[in-house]
Amino acid sequence: MRLTIDIADEFVCKSLVDLARKVDVRVEDLVRVFIRSSVALGRHVADSFVIKNPLRIEDKLERLEAGFKCALDMGFQFYLSFVSPLLKHFKVLGCYCLELMEAYFDDGTIYFSQVRGSSLYVDGIHLWLHGLNGKVEIATETIIDEGVPEEILDRLEELCKSCGDEVWGYEDFGSLEDINIYLDNGYVFFEAKAENYRCLPSVAKISNVVEKILMESGYANWESRKGLKDS
Image (cartoon, rainbow, N blue to C red):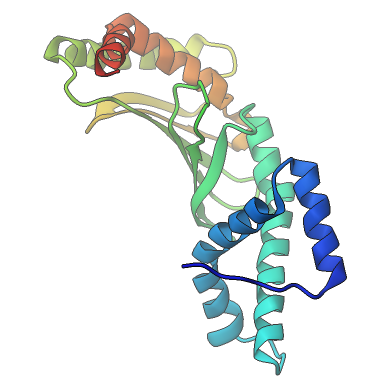
């Protein structure tokens, strides 16, 4: 599909040019990014602000524009006030993006997925928040490639069990209420519970624990050799 769009609003045109210059991309590419990133959100914006619970704006296009502005503003404020401080606390800001979220006042589930280029040994982070400043549960997941030799899988299982007892003595892990590390269905899981999120270790430190397991089991070496072979 090829579209030609005329933008008569001088402020919008100037803003596009200024932003493209700021992020060092062409205006055309910037507009393409806006369109691609808005399409996925568009259905939810239309449902929430235009169809099911419409804003009380008579003009259809103005109502849609106001809906997008509301969604972007609320999302941005949520990122600044909640997501960014949380990832900063875990010392992984910039390494993960928010994907699936079911947030409720009393109980919420939040999932962060690792972005490309991150070197951490944690691919995903699940958080269960029980009330404001209440108890918290964390489960990180690390993907294990298919085709791993049986002896390495056995060693991974053994190390997960032994490491689960060992990490209680690590710095920043002593305040946890429960720790469980195990291999299941192609993932290494690290699960823990704490009085509140401040008692949780950083994801970077959890990554170090997982890295130790992957190294000592021989999996990391096997994965490296497999990668060279595949390339």
